[in-house]
Length: 267
Image (tube, rainbow, N blue to C red; front, side):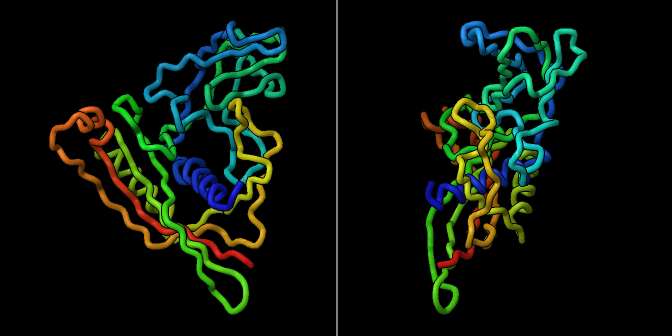
């Protein structure tokens, strides 16, 4: 994994699990349905039946997988599973959690879960631009653009600067303004860890927590700090067009924060 990708993942982790922590919501005692088609004799899959809008498992959201953004360990208090009587808590050693799709996976059929309580990310944090009106706002698109590297002392070492933007797509004016203010404050005079991701990212390919993850910062590098931060609202043209008609709901309440993300790097 190259440096740019690690910095991008570090920025996503910081925004999702620190800056936007006030937008983490909780759903309580949600029914779990057995998914027979995806279960085997050694893997019993139960899916949460949520009617929440936006969906907790829509793109860029998912269940909360760490209790602390600086931890190498899987969450211990964000997800609670109950037996069929709805009262007895099932130990987390009996199942794995698919944080992306909102599922619990048991290795034995002896324990039958019935409900789950979980924390989830209300704001979708993604790299991709929302492509249609069915995208569930609020959405935050993180975009790292130009890179500049320059020496900062006699001898080795350099300052690495990457221009970036955070695009906000909200449900209302109030939500847009709240997100804009919180994200701006998350950058202004702030820094975030430059994580190495030597054993991959937090979440494995199947949505479960990467048990081999190590929270290690990049050796010889400073934290990622932010400069030249500017926030403004974005007004989309009302000239009728097919594209505008398709995207009007998504584009109605928008803002953008531009910034430069920097770090000092040894030779």
